[in-house]
Length: 140
Image (cartoon, rainbow, N blue to C red; front, side):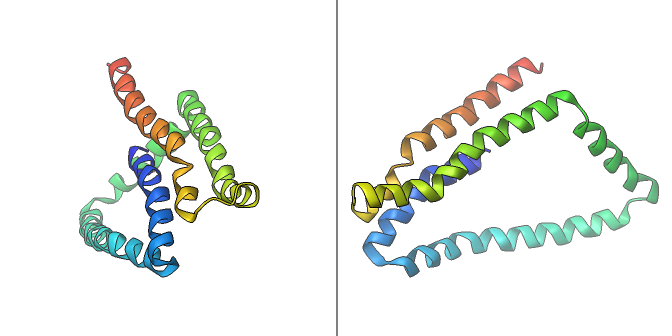
């Protein structure tokens, strides 16, 4: 979640400024350049993991499925998932609607539309890192 928070923190202002300076195509080209190394690393990793998975015995395959189903029935996991869903839903609702409302109401420059999410993104970023340390401390 910290990586998502960092992406949201950097993404909106970056996208707004790049769109205002160089246009819509530059935003997508920049995203492509940033994502392609990640795609290559994930594909290499998935290939190596697939070879390791095939080497496991048949009895080891079912253990991970049982562990996942047990984890998904834990009340703490259900509560944490629900809290994450509710907190992320507010951002998901604001992301497409707030820029349209700002354009209709205030008619700001394009780069300012991306910066409107900075306070929320900073809070999300700090919260994910802070609560990670709190959770580690409490789980000991």
